[in-house]
Image (cartoon, rainbow, N blue to C red; front, side, top):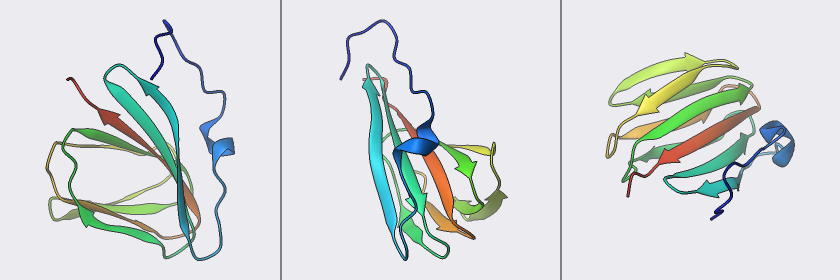
Length: 108
């Protein structure tokens, strides 16, 4: 975690690379109340349904992702953003190679 008054990430898309037939992730920022992870998905890769103990923001940085939350699926393109509340079941599936930024919001 950083105690700095601010943190800059110049280009989150440059911090992960899509790998064939894989999903890869990297934590790019940790600070008070927040953690940011970027994921790179090859086409067809997915994170199966799960929940998080805290609210999250899911933002598509490149490619296209189908994100299912609480039984509803939205297809998101670059710039698309979804808020998912704590303990809400959600899943992510890549329609094509894609990069996703996950922001975990922890008020503790």
